Length: 555
Ligand code: OOB
Figure 1 (cartoon, rainbow, N blue to C red):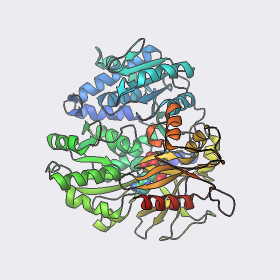
Figure 2: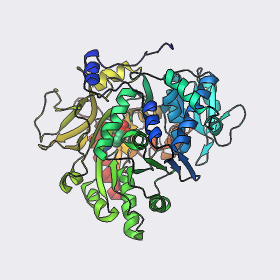
Figure 3: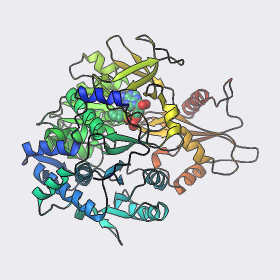
Figure 4: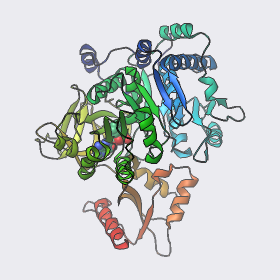
């Protein structure tokens, strides 16, 4: 037996775990095994269509490739519980590789293709990753140079596995994922040594409010429940055709119900590299896509595109899920009239809790609320600053607990002390009102985070990185309004007399240290003095008002 390392992982308390098992929320059957059972029912159905390269893969082939890859990884020297950085764009390779991990017990760390040296070095070290899996290049960025740098800096990192044209000693992902010559044997061997329900299935990245990125451990038990509860609410079934257009390593398109939900049902996944409507509307028509998930900024683009071009491409669409940031009510109302399908609002988090409007909710609920928890075992409290429960209709901080909301981040005791209240309640930092009908409305947030069209930027992280530029006084990152993305990152800087700071300088510095592009400020405001609150904290509210005024003056 492999010895399991649970260091750094915060388990659910024993009595909660017993309750979740007793009630059937935790099934103690790993996710990979359950996907294979679905594949057994429909071996000849197409499981994955990759619109980028034309791949069409049946369930039998998906399982064959994944199991062969799982065995190859183990033969290479990777072991169950070893962590692997995954920095892949959307594509069939991501899906097969993820299933191979789930089968072997090797744990994928779901980074984003947008991440760069700074994030990937930190996360590889934190996770003690042994392999790095990436494409050769995405949008002109060469991941093999990056892999080389990481290998020099991260002592645990041994292998780089590259999709496309691998150089030097790097392995080729497509070879790792090739079909095997003994599918039954591979399956039997992997079944015998399969992960247990409590084992980590994958690590997700936190949107983040602290100075450093954080990892979220999701177990087979908790993730299976997350997927099944969201699948039930979004009514996906074996005949569904699910389009993944947002970055697939994000919890929303991955598992709410997402790609993994579709695979658990024997349904079909259509993968496209980006949500550009001109490119993917024809794919929606050609593949008869029924369901998909996008952020509000993308929903808005789709609506504008359809209003302008009247493509008539969207007839097969049954429901579009929208989440990741607050959808304006006016935009929500256009989904049915322009896209011709049902809107499902989703207010979720990689840390667990997922809320959704129901497909048969009244239009008013669908267009003005972010829905309610997907699992009957989800516990939600709305509290005031003294942690007293508030009555329905009064906005407050949301706290949550449940069978798919872990009780702590990976190896991050300080962040845990801040984000988890006594009793194991996760505090997401969102300000939420619960209506008397149980639906939640996100009113704002009480966390130092900028939500750039669904991509989360920690203000603290940006501030500490900008501080590396010599000669600066106080700096403060705040959100500025943006018509398309909702928010963008703006940096305020107090610069001593005689000094200066330009946008170019800030951008160059952050690019040089390898920070993901979406986090880089798009405006710099130099001020003599940064405003403070009565208790001496930076007054970010005043800064947000100030930048909004400056922008309306400029336009
Ligand atoms: C999703 O997950 P994360 O981990 O990237 O971000 C979570 C945070 C929430 O705490 C909240 O601040 C914000 O994103 N958020 C929303 C929202 N959905 C997420 N804020 C307002 N309205 C919404 N509908 O973003 C995520 C994970 C799974 C499913 C959907 C979204």
